[in-house]
Length: 255
Image (cartoon, rainbow, N blue to C red; front, top):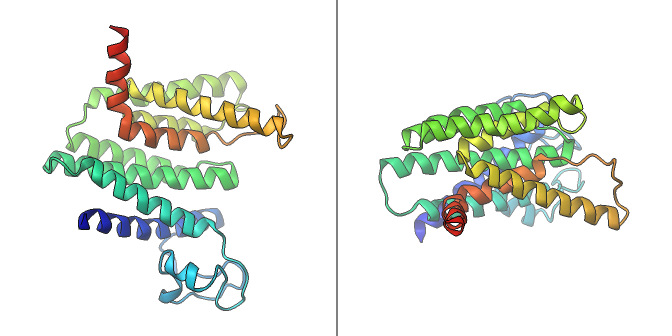
């Protein structure tokens, strides 16, 4: 139980880092360049203003200096990352061995990257290569060290890339962006073949349901652009945890 709590706290810290990284990526700044500051008044924030969740609550969602509101993105990303880190650790808790340690590290990296991609794509309709390409590299390395099938990862990456590449070139980039292609590779390397296909299918179902709902409520039209990463990232996380069980259940039902 204490281990789960520690991973939850680690997730809060990583969530805080993700918030800073997202902000600085958009601003064209290095994540390692200088201390955090208020986006409104530009005042440098003290360490006690940056404690995940706690600072937001104590400050009542406002900057200590200019009293401008702090976006709810910050506590939501921190809490979500903390919860998912705890879930991932619990999922990998038994048995404890070197292989599982590498796979645990892989999945924590994947969750961090997917949360970053989700938020960035939701806010800016873009998927930054700085997140996806770095994640692909480390997910592959730690997957290989953890005993994941290299063939499965490579096929999954090619399928994930190919699925979106066909749409990209047929539409000449009108249906989706190049970032979606890299996200397809990330999903394929993470999930492997054939689980990546199920994850993409789930993402498209989710996207269709949300799009129809937005059109019914007249908040969107058939021409409204939808950030695909917002649906692909959660689908990847779902199948990262439940993919093996779902695949066994699915193919068992076909026999």
